[in-house]
Length: 233
Ligand code: DX5
Ligand code: ZN
Image 1: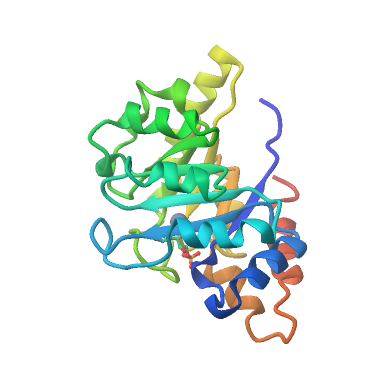
Image 2 (image 1 turned 60 degrees about the vertical axis):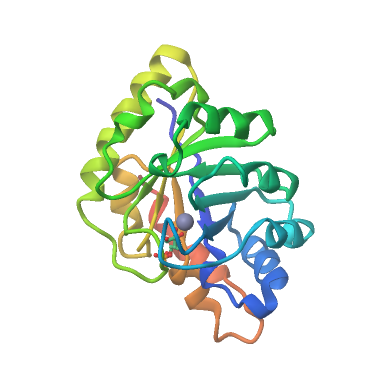
């Protein structure tokens, strides 16, 4: 397998919402790759955040991919709104859709990349019969709902299992599916997570927490520090 191109995806959940456009532009100018966009509905998860209108509002602030993580139930009604709002990648939790195959198709038909998200206690089997419809697998390394939680160490073993499935699929088909992780990622653990086979890293509090107090709200040094850890893997 080729060495992966690592992706750093800051979660705007920890950004300053009063300056969201600037926060999005700055984090990409500081070297990040994707904008991770956490959608919570106070139903599937116990928190309420942002929806398609906000996605549409930040769309002109960057050309970087917007990675929409849906923590809502149901998902099908809202998917086309995010397509219209300019999302590039849309992921959802299998528990939140009665028809996983259909929801994935809806995302792809909208021209976006599609993915499934696995909670810490959710088995990986849900991916088995829909591999051809997946562009990304997102592993939760915290229970979804809040930023700033601690990384659950058992996720490393799960990441290795997911990597093995994705590598087997790549060998059969030549198509690479990304393995993304979300929750508690920081400079201290990103290398170990990468060694478990992850190639895309969501980081909310670690990135936005680091630049918040600087006048310019720049994130160059934290993004560089995360990349430095990935250099020799
Ligand atoms: C949690 C969200 C995460 C969160 C990550 O439900 O899906 O994307 O913002 O935040 P940190 O990196 O602070 O754990
Ligand atoms: Zn997320």
